[in-house]
Image (cartoon, rainbow, N blue to C red; front, side, top):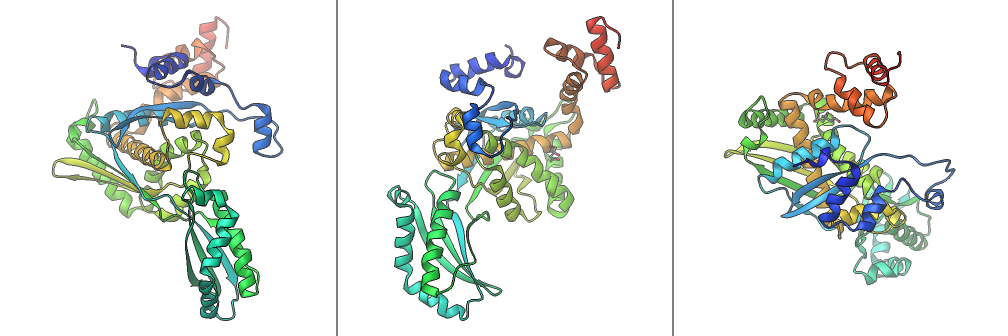
Length: 410
Ligand code: MEV
């Protein structure tokens, strides 16, 4: 049977339609870009659109449910690696993932408060009033069971910091948090008789998502190396990332290869995720892999501030289609899917490093990129790529092959 990756994009979409993707969503995903009106209203000074390929990781089992996750990335091998990782973990039952309740926080900060304790006492005495202000700023959030949930105070140097904890329901929550923070800041300023220095969402997040797999080592084998040896090397690479910040950064980059591609495809804010992850990881690896009791156990923990409603998602038809493709109905569903994807992406990278190295898998894709750079198009891309042997993988060789193919001189 022809493999998914060997099909044309249209035939791949047909398979996804057969598996439940709505035809209208398939058409949206296939369409070239945004309507000019939408593009011009999403950001400023628009002079065009920037296209990237959209691919999928298929049938990644997360908490017993098979998910197809859309990914947008310019990097060759990322999607192939994710599918590879998914195939391996599915043989051992897939990924188990949990997400803490979705919360965002905002800070309202006062500078040079004359008496910190006195200020906290004043604001605490008006706590109920501050909650009413927050509700009035966004009544619909409260109706959906969300809105402001807590206010805490802390002193940071000369600054008095109010931290507002907000439940954003199924949105990412940045707009809601900023709206509530500005309203609470204005009210608190009146109570303290001094203006707030700043009122803004923090991209730091304590709401963590965790993904775990427990694999049969044999499933990790490569054509050259047995599974147990690969598992031992993966565990050693994980240990290395714990003690070597240089390796930890790259280890985490492999995880984010998958996560950021799916965050982008679902219309979420990649910078918010990157900032939260950087604040959380502090240069340490986000995942660990250990061989224990005959199993290879992998575990990933990170914050994933995303939403399934609101923000740019409402304006991006492909993001909505991507969310439906993955059946991501809640923030928790999406967070668990993203964490699972990050973990399998990490596994695929470590397995390649532990086995043949990373370049072996990249070679076919690099050959295609060289063919395109040489001017090949359509069927020529595959023909030129196939002709580029490992020794002659240069632009000059690609140009020569293309010239031979076209019967012209280089
Ligand atoms: C490349 O984009 C990502 C890797 O370097 C990750 C890793 O080394 O773990 C392959």
